[in-house]
Amino acid sequence: MITIPHNSWSISTAVTCLLLVGGCSSTLKVAVPTYAEYPQRRAHPMTITLHVTEEYSGYVYAKHYPLGDALERNSVAIVERIFDEVHVAKGSDAEISENSTGVLTPKVTFVDMSTGVSIFDKIDFVIDVEWVLQDARGNTLWMKTIRGKGRNTMDSVLSGVSHFEDRVRMGLENLFTNSYEAMSTSPLIHALGQDQ
Image (tube, rainbow, N blue to C red):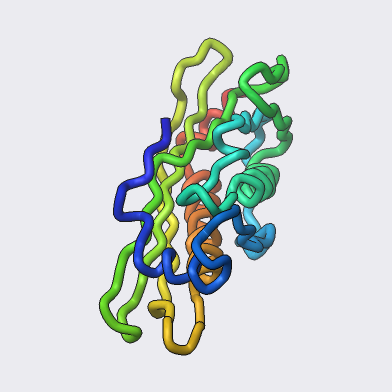
């Protein structure tokens, strides 16, 4: 189960909600693009099944900000760049391709938003995703938790300026940039591809 630390509902987030919806009575969409600015590297010669769970694709931050769609889209995008062939399996009952060398499953393990005192303070949005690569028998071949962080200035109550969405977008972009680097340069994953 994913747990969000109690302090993740920060002053910054609360201010954003008050400004936008008068108390956060409904969910709000954070517009996050599918990032494409990754270094060109030779793909690992492997066939991988990317397992996208309901928990991951339906992830909602602080009960009001659905991020699951952005997580799923960007996970598919980087995995398709890292491996020669990718099959996407959605849900707990999804079929795993028989041709797959392994099954790669991402999971959100931590999300937090720091707080500030003045409008000059920097606020951090932090998100951790654990990537687990397993073989057909469920043995773990590779596992790594990747952190993404977005930082900008505190939201201003007086001016009505909210930097919350930009902070989240930066954090997710950083998360997938770091995830791409970790997987695309992993000697172990490369060796697994050579053994295929």
